[in-house]
Structure formats: structure tokens, C-alpha cells
Length: 585
Image (tube, rainbow, N blue to C red):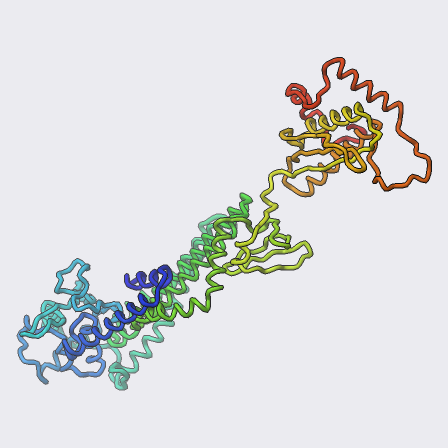
């Protein structure tokens, strides 16, 4: 692709334009355009100031059957032809026939239009190659040469060396053999300087070439499928489709180029149709890249799902869409450039108009940037359960403009990425453990030894439970509330799934209830409660047992208050059964 197109794409889409800079760029582009037109008219009236103008003028002269004008684009200095007059018309006609039979010229739109030509093509600075003549298995380069005529500015002509080789071949050949095999009566009607038959023939040839290319690629596919075991199950079979579709276009173009030259269709017709061929080749390239993006992203998504890396799915989707968008923009620019439009001036004008457009599309750009932030910073990924603002739900899609959340009520919330990325996002899917935090209210009738018993037994549960992280598990007697004695239980549950956490929480709560029951104490009622019937009171037997147990601990120096020693903690770890068997606590 033309280097300046890539440069201007970067300017428009990457560089932050200021209006003054954009105005300067537009003015410069307009000046360049005016200068180019000036060069074409003032430096040489018939456009021979650059290689593109020379080829374009020569072909236009042939199309208009203005052979004397066509001769002005040829350097006859190395031949015996002197003055160009009506006697030279036959020679130009013969040259056209050789071009029709053997010549291939680059599309005009891709020939260099600088007065200096392409100085990086490896040829002499005054030589420019624009095509070839494939004569009797011998290739003759169609070169242009920059020549200074008297005191005037240099002009580009078909080089004297190329002209000499052409005339030598014409003089040494039975020229009737070069004439078209198509009957003369079919060549009578003309359009744009070429027989109507040639125009119709190349259109028919294009359709026939595509059908032939379709048959060839279908045959290739059948052969590959027969030789490739497990073709339909292989994820890499997608690459075959990626290759065959653009290959079909390339084969069709190759058939058109070769057959049209072999049958001797007019160089004017072939040159006009070269735009179609060139666009077809660019289309093949872009289809290949498009399908390659789809194939690679599809394989990448499959692997991410296999490895359960769901966070990468959003990034792959976003990058795929961004790459396709950039590809479409570049394709449009190349098509316009191929058709001869001044893309440079157009992009510069877009740079100025883009300022106004950017003001109107500010929120859209902001949302795209927000989408990039969500994709690459990854506060959430597709499938994550999260909370932002007052909304709780599961992320279903992260797009270029917005993110979609499926709420607990099964509704779908769509939030612009700019708003979503700026909010406080709580991602529950990234939780590694659950916090178990509760405060028990015990009756004021609970004695100090009963409290010690409860504290010890509750700590045993936390240290012994296989799903509880012993660091920093704690049970503390906080103090005296208005209606109860306060005991806080703090621990982390080593599970990541909410449903599993609920099961562990239930198990711990049941074990807590059993400890309180065994201690002879009980959970407090609110102080406002009025007892209508006589209170049954607390169990004196269990109270005595709890107090005896505490006295035993004290006598044996085994009362683990205020803290358990590390040896006891290690001995208690994972000694409880979880999930518990019935009757086994």
C-alpha cells in the first residue's frame, strides 16, 4: 500500500489534531494538488512531466486513435525514424498491435506520479519500469526515460532502448501473425478506442475465469479432505477455508491476465480492466486477512474456554472487532486510491472535518476508550458476578460501546462503557474466601465459667474445621450489651462458590448451637420481653459440668484463654468431619 496512506491514517486516527495544524495540512495538501496540476499543464502540456502522466496520455491517445499524439510519448532517438508525421502512423499502429499481443502495463493509478519517478526502485534515477513485453519467451522491459529536451523541463518518454527493441521485432516478424485471430467483422464497432467485441470478451472472460477458479479450489478442497484424516473434527480445518476463498480470486485474475493477452485483446481494454483486477487482488488480500482474524480469534476463544480463562474472551472479541474496523477503513482508502482519487487531500480534509465530528461523537469515543479500559484492565470479565452502583448481576457481554449485565431479576441492563469503567465495581467472581462474621447474644445468667467453656469450644470448631482458615480465626467475648452478653466469631471460609459457602456456614451455625446447648447457657431474648409463664431456668446439672470442666482445665494449666497455644491449634486442625456424618459432630 502507498506509504503516504499509512502515514495519513496514523495522523487522522492517532495524532490529536488542533484546528490550526489541520488547516495547515489541508492547505499543504491543496497546494500539492494545485502544484501537481500546474506541473502537468505548465511543465508539459500533454502531461509527460511524470511517469503516470506519460503512460496515461499514451493510452488515451491510443484509445482515441490519435496515433500522432501517441508518438509524442515515444523516444525514437535510437531508431531511423526522423520527423514524426502521417507516415509514422503505421509504425504506431504496429506498436499497438505488439502491445495488444504481448504487453502488460501496470495500472495507471499505481504508477509513480512524481516528477523524479520512483528513486527507490533499484533502477537508474532517470529510468522507470512500467511493464513488460513477453515476446517468444523473452521479456522486454517497458521502461520510461526522463529526457531533457532543449531548454525545457525534463519529460518522461517510452525509452529509446524499449522503442528500438520493439521496432526490431516488428521488422523481423511476419506481421500478419501478430494480428488478432478474431474476424474483422467482429472488430468494426468501437467504444473508447477499442473494439466492442474486446469489451464484451473480457467481461465474459472474467465470469468464465471465476467459474474455472471455483472449480479448481473446490477440487483442492476435496483432495485435502480426502488426504487429511479427521478434517471435519480439526479446529485447524478453518484455515483451509481462509486460504481457498482469496485463492479463488487470485486464480481468476491470473487467468484473465494471461488469456486476455494470449488472444490479443486491446491493451486499452486490458488497461481499463486492470483496475478491476487490482481491486480483485486487494479484495483477495483483505478477505484473507478478515477470515484469518476470524479463524485465529475462534481458535483462541476455544482454547480459552478449554482452560476456563473466561476473562480473555472479552479481550479477544474486542481486538477482533477493532482489527476488522481498521481493515475496512484501510480497504476503502486503497480502493479510492486505486480508482485514482486524491486520497491524500481527502484524508487531510477529514482531519479538519474530524474536529467537528469528534465534538459530536465525543461520548462515542469516550465509550470506546472506556471499553478498552474494561477489556485490558479487566475489573470484570464475561461470566463474572459483580456489583456496580445499586445493580447486581452477571456480565454477559463487553462490547466496544457498552457492557451488558444480567441482573438477579433476569432483566438485561446495558450501561455505556464510559459510565461503567468510572464506577466502583465489586467483582464477586474474584473472591478467594468468604468472611464468616457473626455476633452471638448470650443470656445474662451465663456464668463466667460457662462463658469460658463456650469460648474454648467455639475456638475448637474454627481451628478444627477443614473449611475454615485458622489464621486469623477468632472468638472473643466483646462485652455487655443492653440485653445480652456479646460474643463475636470472625473467620474466613476457604471456598469461592456462594452455594458452597452457604453449606459451610450452615454447618458452623449448627455446631455453634450445639456448643451453647451443651454449656447450659442459651441465646438471649430482647430485654423488653415479658415472661407470662414461670421461667424454667437454666440446667444446674449442665452448669455444674461446665464449671467442673473449666476447673479441670485450670488445675491442669490447660485453659486456653485468652489465646490457644500453637501446639494445641496444630493438634486440633482438621479433626472435625466435614461434611458431618449424621450424629457425628
